[in-house]
Amino acid sequence: MQNSNYFGTREDKYKKNKKHRKLKVFILILVLLIGGGGAYAMRISGQIKSAANKIYKPADGKSVSTSIKNKKAFSILLLGVDTGAEGRVDKGNSDTMIVATVNPKKNQVKLVSIPRDTLAQLQGAESFNMQKINAAYNVGGSKMAMSTVEKMFDVPIDYYVTVNMGALSKIVDAVGGVDVEVPFDFAWNGSSFTKGKMHLNGTQALNYSRMRYDDPEGDYGRQKRQRQVITSMIKSAVSFKSLTNFESILNTLEDSVATNLSFDDMVSMQANYRSAAKSIKSDYLKGRDADVEGSSYQIPTNDEIQRVSDVLRTALGLKTTTIDNAETKQNDLNTNFTGLEYQQDFTVYSESVMNGGTSTDTATNDYSTDTTYSDQSSTTGNTWSTQESTSQWNNGY
Image (cartoon, rainbow, N blue to C red; front, side):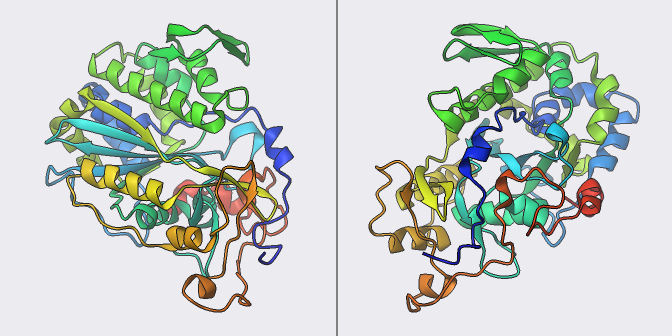
């Protein structure tokens, strides 16, 4: 096993007691612009441009994509971060991660969920660093999250939309509510849900998307319900249901959203990509339960990583490639790991071993605490200060 500080010592039972995580409002831009709300919004005299300028934050160090300008297929990494939720004041992790591809030739939107506990090499860290993929945002902001997803699946990520907890219920109400297929009866935070078709208002949609631990499929079940809500919101926007509350929520959204989509990008999306929202397909990366230095992780097989890469590249009209990266190499080294046992041990080897070095080499990590479930602004090993976290939107994240 590797250095005990490598993944931290936070107990898994702590996360199991955190049952009230909220769905983040990462769907804002996708719904209002691709879905058709953009057409309504653009007619609001100057206000949408002002809001767009306030949420525009280039991903520092990443080249500006010209895909939308050239009317090509493009991808957006949707990040729902937990800053501000449940009293948090630290920078937070991206507890919701979805890659959305939009292809105008195929007239299709593809949504692919990435489990937050997926083991991944954080791209751009100061040293070799493998953690849960949702820590990429905590360590290096939206730029690192984009780069990490790009490397894991060998797929270009053109844009990002990062949203902290905010006005989901207002947005749902603004598009006239959402229609979902409830998989089983359950109650959550004052809302009751009955198996079958239901029309949800904003508060109900938020609660429907939050529940995780009472779902037989755990986080995968929550991801499915999140994609249901996103899909229904886009379709509601396309059908031009009431968006009369749009102006009233702009100020809230300005403080909750960051994106490298420029105002011109948004105008082009509304004009050239709206028909793609009529066909929305969903998928997800499937992992295997694993224990890494006392913490629960999801470890996708090499075949599954390859499958998702093929899905995303095909959706973008790109040729498929053979994936060979840190994640696949770690799988190759763990010859005894089957994923068939609950919380089976999985060893993360150092970069040297991963690249053919000796087994005596140890892994290193500049971030000694597993921050995935941190709810403190000054947890030991957490390099993010309260000052940094409260100004994140001004730092390009």
